[in-house]
Amino acid sequence: MEARGESAYRGARALVTGGLGFIGSHLARRLVELDADVTIVDAMIPGCGANRWNIHDILSKVTVCEVDLRDREAITPLVRDQAYIFNLAGQVSHIDSMARPLDDLAINCRSHLTLLEVCRNENPGARIVYAGTRQQYGRALRLPVDEGHPMNPTDVNGINKMAAEWYHRLYHDVYGMHTCSLRLTNTFGPGQLIRHARQGFLSVFIRKALDGEIIQVFGDGSQLRDYNYVSDVVTAFLLAAADARTAGRVYNLASHEVLSVMQVAEMLVKSGAGGVEIVPFPDDRKRIDIGSYYGSFEKIRAELGWEPRVTVEDGLERTIRYYREHLEHYL
Ligand SMILES: NC(=O)c1ccc[n+]([C@@H]2O[C@H](COP(=O)([O-])OP(=O)(O)OC[C@H]3O[C@@H](n4cnc5c(N)ncnc54)[C@H](O)[C@@H]3O)[C@@H](O)[C@H]2O)c1
Image (tube, rainbow, N blue to C red; front, top):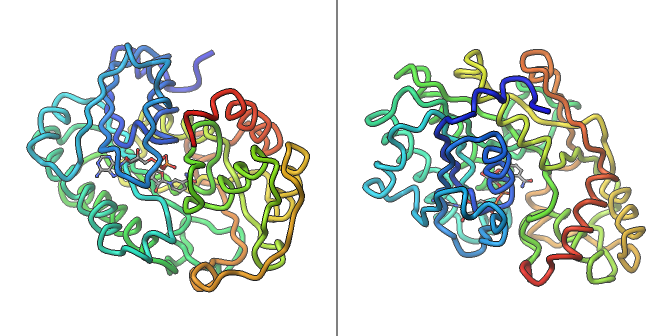
């Protein structure tokens, strides 16, 4: 059954940047199911989550362009005539952003400014939804964190993601373009990069469960987090782009469930991990850790009717089942 606003996508042209990655590929699949005319732009950036297997089942139904958003000439014809641009291209690793800050700047800022400039010149009427992050807030001063909470990022990635969100807002405020940002929290599901341990603790824990290994929890494991299953995040993108009222707006994604890192690790022991071990925070991670965080999704619920549907337990089961079947494509 179609959710609210999804009929808008039938026959519509939609561009998904970062569409070979984890969330972008799920979004592309849902758009195909809704009969949209889908183009994927992805530069297959090394270390990021790009994986052609993520779209193997829809390959014949989408146009895939291996193009970097920073390549203005190459993206110009791709941006023209798109009704919707889902802008999910990005470098996600906080730790990598500290190790190679200039790469993070180039990927997470220059890419988006280039895309916005091309849109301004070629397609100012497109609806653009950007994938922001809870990392923009940094350490929470109060919980749950709402959209009015100050932004004090603790790492280079958070600063660059915040700047890219501001570029989107600026192009709305100054040029009247329809841009909107969703601030995603920990998103999980099939197709996320699990090859290395630099893209967030959840993907590391999932890999440990698949390998039957012990999960190492940093600190005491009491840090609180919220988690969204990827299908719920996709729904939020579709709702945001389909609604004319989202122009210039930002929305948190968050969850009904708030679980400590330890609770999630214990869930994954039931799914195959060999146990849980508490270890001290490595220095490089401690320095940028945000402590406990969970967000409020009241704004997007009130304005767009979004709320997450898939529980963490159910989502983890679906995720583990997927990887057990397709693991060879993710190692
Ligand atoms: N996964 C999460 O928990 C999470 C949380 C908060 C925000 N986000 C944001 O959501 C977006 C998608 O995240 P994901 O988990 O799917 O990451 P991912 O690494 O799986 O996918 C990102 C994709 O973007 C592509 N890309 C990067 N720079 C590009 C460029 N200049 N031109 C073209 N393609 C480029 C990469 O090759 C990769 O395929 C990112 O912007 C990320 O910051 C994700």
